[in-house]
Image (tube, rainbow, N blue to C red):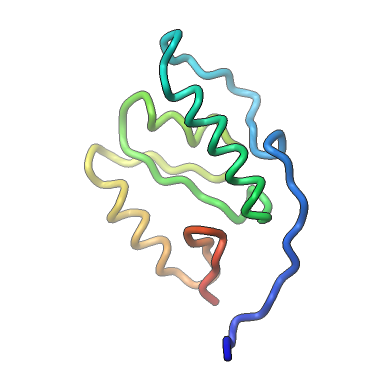
Length: 102
């Protein structure tokens, strides 16, 4: 039996996660499709933007956190995973798939 409290999943749309910033990638870049898929995936998670965080490195794809309304943190090259792993271990922070550690 799980000891985690069950919280209702709310209905969100992709627009709830789209920021006002316009992507500045090159025309035809695959990152446009990736960010659209991220918006849809975030809506399916059922958690509000303030419960989701992106940790990214450097480069064009690392601009994605700025194009969402979720929290974003940019790290130096090669350090995104250690920073994300440290943060995911903190009580009360969102984890992959919307699961939470209490």
